[in-house]
Amino acid sequence: MRRWVARIALGLLGLVVLALTCGASYEALARRQVAARFPVPGKLVDIGGRALHIDCRGTGSPTVVFESGLDSAGALAWSLVHDEVAQVTRACSYSRAGILSSDPAVGERDADAVAEDLHVLLERAGERPPLVLVAHSLGGIYAMGYTRRFGAEVAGLVLVDTFHPDSKQRMEAAGIHLPNPLRPLQIASALSWTGLVRLVLGSEDAVAAYDPTSIGALRSELEALDQSVAQAGALRQLGARPLYVLSAGKVEQEFLAQAQLTAERGEQFVAVKRALNEEQASWSSQSQLEVIVDSTHAIHREQPDRVIHAARWVIEAVRAAPR
Image 1 (cartoon, one colour):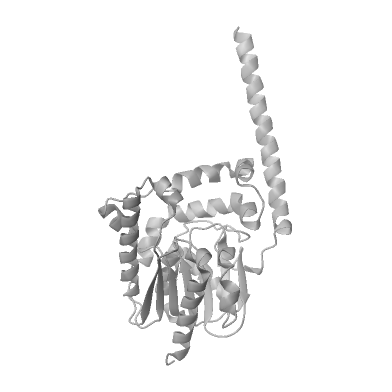
Image 2: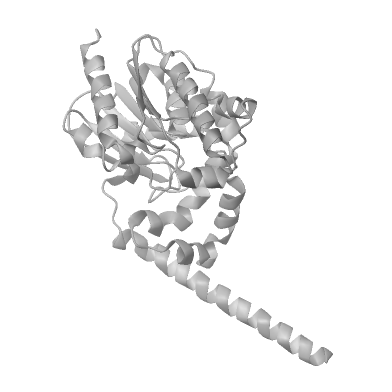
């Protein structure tokens, strides 16, 4: 009986090893082919031993720089907005370290590190200030972090339903405890080499094809979130820089289910978030706040015309300001 148990155990172990070997080979082959199968518009720029992806279009000043949220789409997150903004000025989207075709980075991926990467990237790509930063969600923390570090370059900002430095504390004070996606990302990142993530998510488009590698970058950014919030939160005054804040008026049903929030709690969540967005608008003496009542968090995908309008408002305000 013991011999049969041992044989079955060895057989199962052999199947697991075979599955892992096949999965790892499948994943390695897919990673080698992804760049050829799904070329991403733009170029890779060496920033000192590693390269970041940037896609710049149009001409004129100021230069608009799009900063995505905690999103594996990277530069592609702005596909419904980019060309329209590029009709009136220079507009650049980019992918942070490890996302899409950008090389991964070593060390903490906090707001200071992200700001330093972007500063060097713009410089080596030949893109010049003044800059207008257009940021979504967690990207707002990075935009404010960049402004704190390189404020002389930043002429204006558009914050698209962005994360406020006090978001977590204000939500918890209101009795709203949101799930932390860090643990699932850590597990997915640890398993990405096996091909399992690609098998689950598929490879039907560029974002999905790069997801197994992008997930590691998202995990690193979440692990450094508290540091990023502290760094960016040190700046809450933008002077007279033109600032346009967009606030989503709805929440996704999927979000409510994941966060285990009732419809009433969802309305409370929106109310707290709107108050935080109103506070963000107060950071500048020249600001606009717009609540998009029929949009959820992804305003740049659901209502791209409002983001385009906000960007143009800031661009025009920057151009009209005395030098």
